[in-house]
Image (cartoon, rainbow, N blue to C red; front, top):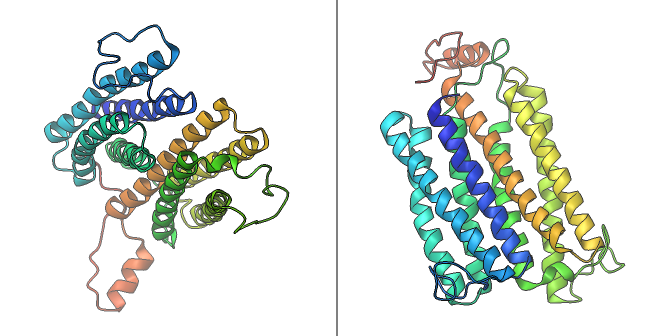
Length: 324
């Protein structure tokens, strides 16, 4: 691990912890613990009130993470400017961070308007994804075991799965913001029925989230199958896919416990933490696959097909090209 990759990992981990801290603020009802911004009740040090301290701690963590993100960007321009897969996400992250800080102030001033909170979380997840991508792309080229084989459908399938996971996270945020989390009791049924669509608007929102979660689980299962079938030559990819599947299973279990126990605050916070972890794992997988496409040699069978079809496929070395 290079020093720059360690910096990028620190920025990504800090952003993840910041998202979890934001979830704690939400589930404890501390979002308005500091009703003004950037001060708290008109002073730099918050009063001895639980809600104020929780909210102010979240702000302090953000103040610590922001310099890490800026340092990752500066390091990319200084040390890795020739690597687009590092430079582009590292440059976009602080731009989104500025928007995120402004949205944080708006959330306070509008007293936690539902859609503003949703957009606030969306930007947080995008920043996390960019930093995770930067950290993975800044590492050494994944070492293949044997001769690289066919890529199969995994590249497109992994990208689709990551997009579906991000959508699921945002729908989950909307479920929480609208209070639909309490609309369905029990799992896998909902209020003693299988799919009681049309009985209530909040029930419909809740069921949409559940169905989308099932669809994501199916996509992840397909990703694991493709990874272990066609990508064993690059062990990091099947391992990343398996990790993603484990996290998705754990996240579904947390959700099931939540709706079966009237959504206690701890379970709700764990659900957000799990969602961010699933999203980060999906980004890791997509980045690994993208790096393999960009930096691994073309399989001999593919090169032969290109030559026979007149595509002018050029020969490539049998070993991976070393990273800068």
